[in-house]
Length: 136
Image (cartoon, rainbow, N blue to C red; front, side, top):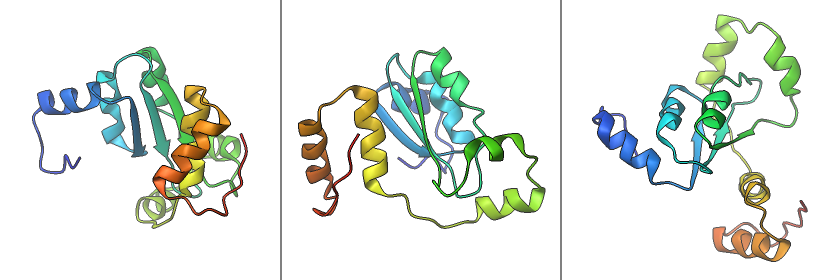
């Protein structure tokens, strides 16, 4: 859903409150997590070199399940603790990158407690290449 044209707060609340799983880029829009219902999974995607977990506490306070994806080449703890320059923030905001679908599916399946069979079924449904042989 595209909220770029400024929908009313009621529309945003309705949208967020009716979802079981929300996958979104990290940013101010994820503050709408205040409207989720308990057990809603909210997975934030962080750009490479950027990890600033500020919205996760909000998600858990309202009863949601907070998940993240970040580039595995970066250590999120060192990124979280380091001071990032304004130039780094601008670079992260303008970056194009690809998130492997299998990583997202795997995180959601683990959070929901699904079995390997269900995981493989979802991988097939989403069209992840057959060569995927990831495990939990």
